[in-house]
Length: 255
Image 1: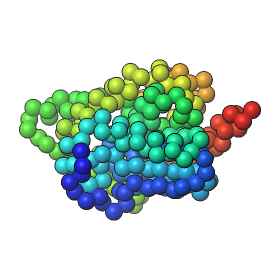
Image 2: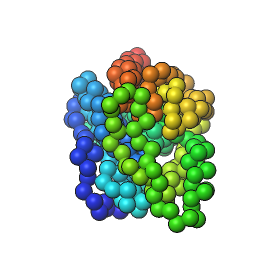
Image 3: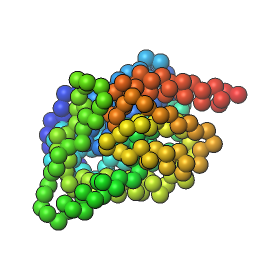
């Protein structure tokens, strides 16, 4: 599905060509690349080739999102992976929120991925399920948005002000599908979880950590950020940890 509205400023995909190590950076549900661009830039400064795709229906208008499906979101990140694999010898994947969910999906489907770094990833959203069930037959198309759950004062996430009700169902289906695939993930993983998150229950990250089959896995608690941790007080810590994780995997593979 082609977007019918123009792309918002700062919501465009970003690409930084670099060395033979690629990093795919995926934004979240109703969000944009703006939320993960700082992380992308920090990774690019290490010399990595970095791509941050714009998920189908995102970064334009909620009406575009209303017409997009979770299969199209998967197609967006599959194409992103292919783009990096075309020039890179190895690829790592990181993502925020639903971007973390899509990161886990890619790891389950593509064992060649060298490492993953999901940040406040969603796999089970009881409140969203409850809200959707209450709304699905009411004729309501849009509800209040979920963006900008940020602890730091004065920082805004570029995200839709409204969430399409239809998209909630797409998200729920994606989360539950990926939840069922967690045991198929064998990729080295660094899982980030905000101690306080008003969007995705932190229990999601703990369940991911315990359910994946990866021999190499680490759990990083973010004590000073809410859901959009990649724009929050811990954004530098996340970037530092991701960079160290990638280099550690590379060293281990060199032996």
